[in-house]
Image (cartoon, rainbow, N blue to C red; front, side):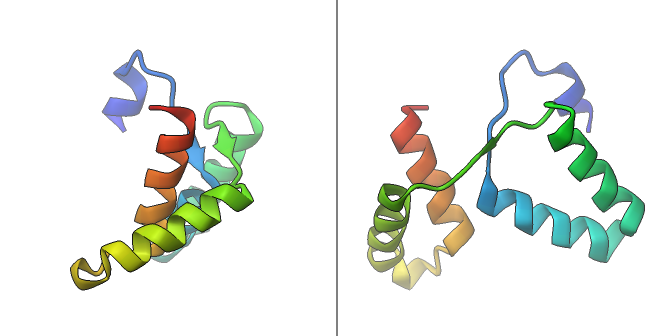
Length: 87
């Protein structure tokens, strides 16, 4: 949490990461933590980047390419969005 409070960088959260984060927060920290995540999105603290069709195509390419490494959907979408946004 300290990183989020101190980083000067803008943060962008792919929608796929938001879903996984919400699940993990609910499972490990409870409903209040999950609600706080949603409040952060609503308050503009965590800008959410929706996935485009091009992102899904690139995700599929990455999943095929890194199949033996068990590179997952969320990781592949993060890479696809980062490539698209050139970050």
